[in-house]
Length: 83
Image (tube, rainbow, N blue to C red; front, top):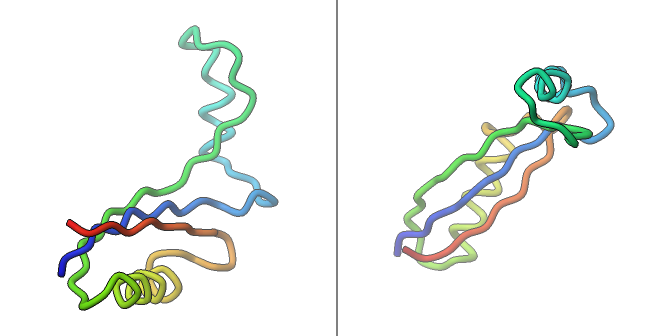
């Protein structure tokens, strides 16, 4: 069966996010007010072929831990659904 995994990777809240700070700082320059903070991360979609949703979840988990996320500076979460 084929599953679609939607993965969100974000910098740890304790770490400075220079990209997010730059965007937040410049919002007022394009007349967007009321924004207090911006955090910028990654959204990844992955199609996984597996016998079960649990197996697909393990494949995504290992992909995040070993390749997609830098666990020292980033956190991740994901949702999986059958296609």
